[in-house]
Length: 153
Ligand code: FES
Image (cartoon, rainbow, N blue to C red; front, side, top):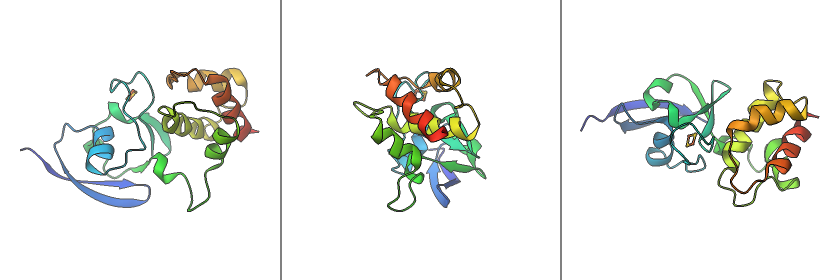
Protein backbone atom coordinates (compact mmCIF):
# COMPACT_ATOMS: atom_id res chain seq x y z
CA UNK A 1 0.00 0.00 0.00
CA UNK A 2 0.98 3.66 -0.08
CA UNK A 3 1.11 3.96 3.67
CA UNK A 4 3.95 6.01 5.07
CA UNK A 5 4.90 7.29 8.51
CA UNK A 6 3.32 10.48 9.72
CA UNK A 7 3.91 12.36 12.95
CA UNK A 8 1.04 14.12 14.62
CA UNK A 9 1.13 16.09 17.87
CA UNK A 10 -2.15 15.34 19.58
CA UNK A 11 -3.12 16.64 23.01
CA UNK A 12 0.52 17.44 23.68
CA UNK A 13 1.91 14.04 22.71
CA UNK A 14 3.78 13.13 19.53
CA UNK A 15 2.21 10.12 17.85
CA UNK A 16 3.46 8.27 14.81
CA UNK A 17 1.07 6.47 12.48
CA UNK A 18 1.39 4.60 9.23
CA UNK A 19 -1.24 5.99 6.90
CA UNK A 20 -1.89 6.76 3.29
CA UNK A 21 -1.56 10.42 2.30
CA UNK A 22 -5.28 10.62 1.50
CA UNK A 23 -6.34 9.78 5.07
CA UNK A 24 -8.32 12.59 6.70
CA UNK A 25 -7.40 13.89 10.12
CA UNK A 26 -10.73 12.52 11.33
CA UNK A 27 -9.95 8.99 10.17
CA UNK A 28 -6.41 9.24 11.51
CA UNK A 29 -7.78 10.11 14.95
CA UNK A 30 -10.52 7.49 15.01
CA UNK A 31 -9.01 4.60 13.09
CA UNK A 32 -5.27 4.95 13.55
CA UNK A 33 -5.09 6.44 17.05
CA UNK A 34 -8.27 5.09 18.65
CA UNK A 35 -9.30 8.61 19.66
CA UNK A 36 -12.99 7.98 19.04
CA UNK A 37 -14.28 10.97 21.02
CA UNK A 38 -14.21 12.91 17.76
CA UNK A 39 -17.31 11.81 15.86
CA UNK A 40 -18.00 11.19 12.19
CA UNK A 41 -21.41 12.48 11.17
CA UNK A 42 -21.54 13.56 7.55
CA UNK A 43 -17.83 13.30 6.59
CA UNK A 44 -18.45 16.29 4.29
CA UNK A 45 -18.08 19.42 6.41
CA UNK A 46 -21.79 19.80 7.05
CA UNK A 47 -22.41 18.75 10.66
CA UNK A 48 -19.53 19.76 12.94
CA UNK A 49 -19.42 16.41 14.77
CA UNK A 50 -15.74 16.08 13.86
CA UNK A 51 -14.66 19.48 15.24
CA UNK A 52 -11.15 19.62 16.73
CA UNK A 53 -8.67 22.45 17.32
CA UNK A 54 -5.55 22.89 15.22
CA UNK A 55 -3.15 25.51 16.57
CA UNK A 56 -6.01 26.76 18.72
CA UNK A 57 -8.55 27.24 15.93
CA UNK A 58 -11.48 24.95 15.31
CA UNK A 59 -11.67 22.92 12.14
CA UNK A 60 -13.79 20.14 10.73
CA UNK A 61 -11.33 17.26 10.87
CA UNK A 62 -13.15 15.46 8.04
CA UNK A 63 -12.12 18.26 5.66
CA UNK A 64 -8.37 18.19 6.22
CA UNK A 65 -5.78 15.55 5.45
CA UNK A 66 -3.83 14.19 8.40
CA UNK A 67 -0.57 14.73 6.53
CA UNK A 68 -1.27 18.47 6.29
CA UNK A 69 -1.41 18.72 10.07
CA UNK A 70 2.06 17.51 10.88
CA UNK A 71 3.96 20.05 12.99
CA UNK A 72 0.74 21.55 14.35
CA UNK A 73 -0.88 21.34 17.77
CA UNK A 74 -3.99 19.21 17.51
CA UNK A 75 -6.45 19.16 20.40
CA UNK A 76 -9.35 16.73 20.61
CA UNK A 77 -12.12 16.31 23.16
CA UNK A 78 -9.88 13.79 24.95
CA UNK A 79 -7.36 16.58 25.60
CA UNK A 80 -9.75 19.04 27.21
CA UNK A 81 -10.02 17.76 30.78
CA UNK A 82 -6.99 18.19 33.03
CA UNK A 83 -6.71 14.93 34.95
CA UNK A 84 -9.96 14.51 36.84
CA UNK A 85 -10.95 18.14 36.33
CA UNK A 86 -13.35 18.68 33.46
CA UNK A 87 -12.95 21.76 31.31
CA UNK A 88 -15.40 24.54 32.31
CA UNK A 89 -17.22 24.02 29.00
CA UNK A 90 -17.73 20.34 29.81
CA UNK A 91 -19.06 21.30 33.26
CA UNK A 92 -21.41 23.84 31.69
CA UNK A 93 -22.81 21.28 29.24
CA UNK A 94 -23.58 18.96 32.14
CA UNK A 95 -25.14 21.73 34.21
CA UNK A 96 -27.37 22.95 31.35
CA UNK A 97 -28.21 19.51 29.88
CA UNK A 98 -26.50 20.54 26.64
CA UNK A 99 -27.03 17.15 25.05
CA UNK A 100 -29.55 14.37 24.58
CA UNK A 101 -28.15 11.46 22.56
CA UNK A 102 -24.64 12.92 22.96
CA UNK A 103 -23.37 12.19 19.46
CA UNK A 104 -22.76 15.81 18.51
CA UNK A 105 -21.50 16.77 21.98
CA UNK A 106 -17.71 16.50 21.53
CA UNK A 107 -17.93 18.70 18.44
CA UNK A 108 -20.28 21.13 20.17
CA UNK A 109 -17.91 21.43 23.12
CA UNK A 110 -14.84 21.94 20.93
CA UNK A 111 -16.71 24.63 18.99
CA UNK A 112 -17.95 26.18 22.22
CA UNK A 113 -14.43 26.45 23.61
CA UNK A 114 -13.23 28.13 20.41
CA UNK A 115 -16.28 30.39 20.42
CA UNK A 116 -15.45 31.77 23.85
CA UNK A 117 -11.70 31.92 23.25
CA UNK A 118 -12.09 33.84 20.01
CA UNK A 119 -14.56 36.28 21.53
CA UNK A 120 -17.71 35.22 19.69
CA UNK A 121 -19.80 34.38 22.76
CA UNK A 122 -20.53 37.85 24.09
CA UNK A 123 -24.15 37.86 22.90
CA UNK A 124 -26.73 35.13 22.30
CA UNK A 125 -26.96 36.06 18.64
CA UNK A 126 -23.24 35.97 18.02
CA UNK A 127 -22.79 32.69 19.86
CA UNK A 128 -25.74 31.12 18.00
CA UNK A 129 -24.25 32.23 14.68
CA UNK A 130 -20.77 30.91 15.55
CA UNK A 131 -22.19 27.58 16.73
CA UNK A 132 -24.50 27.18 13.72
CA UNK A 133 -22.10 24.80 11.95
CA UNK A 134 -22.64 22.24 14.71
CA UNK A 135 -25.84 20.33 14.05
CA UNK A 136 -27.80 18.72 16.90
CA UNK A 137 -30.47 16.36 15.64
CA UNK A 138 -32.06 16.20 19.08
CA UNK A 139 -32.58 19.96 19.02
CA UNK A 140 -30.76 20.73 22.26
CA UNK A 141 -29.77 24.15 20.89
CA UNK A 142 -31.19 26.33 23.70
CA UNK A 143 -29.28 24.33 26.32
CA UNK A 144 -26.08 24.27 24.24
CA UNK A 145 -26.31 28.05 23.87
CA UNK A 146 -26.88 28.46 27.61
CA UNK A 147 -23.76 26.40 28.33
CA UNK A 148 -21.57 28.39 25.94
CA UNK A 149 -22.89 31.70 27.25
CA UNK A 150 -22.30 30.69 30.85
CA UNK A 151 -18.62 29.99 30.20
CA UNK A 152 -18.33 33.40 28.55
CA UNK A 153 -19.84 35.24 31.51
FE1 FES B 1 -17.02 16.50 9.57
FE2 FES B 1 -19.71 16.28 9.58
S1 FES B 1 -18.20 14.73 9.97
S2 FES B 1 -18.51 18.09 9.40
